[in-house]
Length: 154
Image: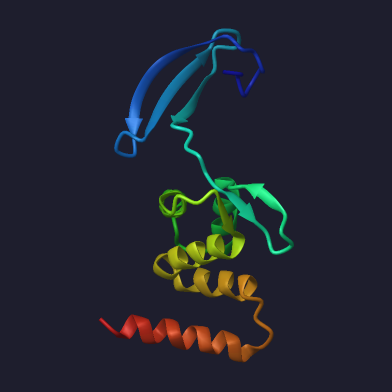
């Protein structure tokens, strides 16, 4: 593992622990060159589908893009980074469970919206307005009405 501070390759593992119910291994490492410590995470690399974009380009599923989108939507909102990470995990799991080799980007976006709906209503409307390309205030109002209606119904 390359040290993030000095770029040397020699390190030693100081501590290993499982995280997220055994799905991830967290390792504390110490660089043998600069002696600084850092944390790495190890997870099973599972086969994720290719994402088919609107213009039919294909690209690998990228969880960092999902996290980035969630962070933008939740900017200045009371949502922890841990909650966002958990949401990304759920999105990734649902996509993986479909067992498809390709998935339309539209489906990925809908999974993100599904998570945001429960996570933070303001972030949900922000993301939906960009993702669904709202053209006027009426589309905002309709989305807010649906969101408010769903919150009133037990």
